[in-house]
Image (tube, rainbow, N blue to C red; front, top):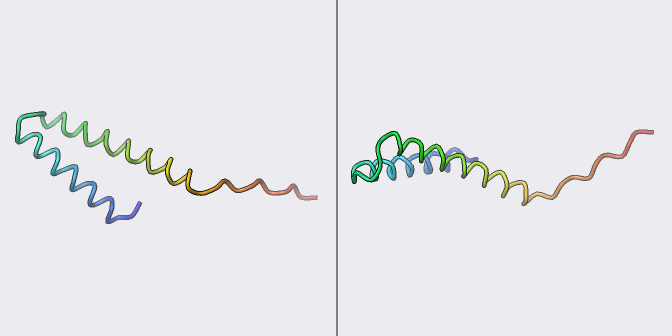
Length: 64
């Protein structure tokens, strides 16, 4: 994943978590857990999308 995309996602999660904590909707611990869960789900989704986009390579022919 591109470093600038990682940075944008990280700052977005920090902002969202800070907003939720400031409004009293979640605790700091819950915000950290939510951020970790979001990163995990995004990582899995990115991997699935990337692997689905590239076709599988055929197996190499056996050497004679």
